[in-house]
Length: 365
Ligand code: NAD
Ligand code: GLY
Image (cartoon, rainbow, N blue to C red; front, side):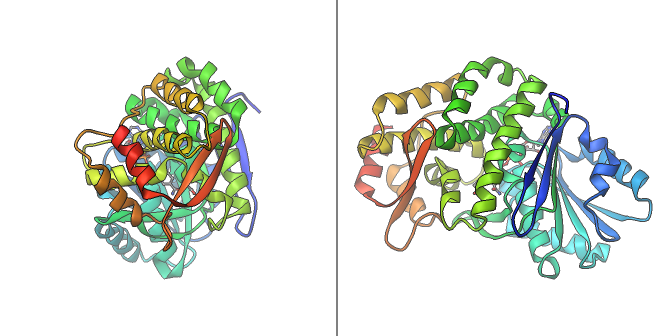
């Protein structure tokens, strides 16, 4: 295996492979292998489609000339991850005449992956979805594990389904066109794996920050493969988040509240909100006596080194953020639930966290 080609197998009731490497979006045989039927709908966004849609379509046509391929392109960004756009994907499937053996091909970042995956979960009560992630965040997180969803004004990802992909094909060459800000957002989710589960990885990320930020192909492929291996291991043991999968939400209770309160517009993107959320969760852990303040500070320093935001954006009220958290999927009837931190590589889920402590941390921030 070359230094930049990796495969991660996900086992369980619906096994699939994650292929990681350069140039994979041109590999017709690899792209066509998971397709079972005569129809494929490629869903993409307005930034990604002009760069990669033609290449994917041409590779598929060359490999499978009889395939009926539809294209559906929506606007780019979190604000487009709506029920309305989900409806347009469903209409595109109907127009294509997609049968039960059709495949939705999600070509883009997590927004496209989540929304197209949800459409695949719903069309005829569930058809195949192949994820072709083009952002680092989607390669290391959202394309793997089968969570699909759209946002509503009341909160992020509140409407969705668990629907594992049939395959994930991550072409690392696509990262060359990714804006640096989006690369850093993906690195926030990579750091998350180190923080919750893999202290050695956290050290490796500290040592290799310059190379990763510069887009070194071999380092990025290694970081993606190690992140996917962690996500695969956790999601195959706990596909429906009844236990340990919740650890993957480290930083997300704060992060989702920030995203929802900003209104999914021009503020922090998902990875950036998670970076701020991890700092706040680490501080909350320290305030509750679970983690040391030094460890919380070290995590903040690492995130800063990666050029990520670590502070709550100005103008967001702590009280409003806590109100958002009450509607988060991680909250339960009994109260707020957080993934809290113990030390590098160790986290745990804590229920019924005192809202006053959460407010204190937000006020201090
Ligand atoms: P995104 O999909 O909005 O992509 C970020 C931006 O990069 C967009 O403007 C997009 O058009 C552009 N882009 C994508 N690939 C590109 C490329 N190769 N070259 C140039 N531009 C490119 O955002 P994201 O960060 O990929 O995903 C965030 C979403 O993922 C959020 O909605 C979040 O909730 C979701 N998510 C889901 C899971 C899950 O398990 N399902 C996990 C984490 C995040
Ligand atoms: N991103 C969190 C999860 O997939 O569970």
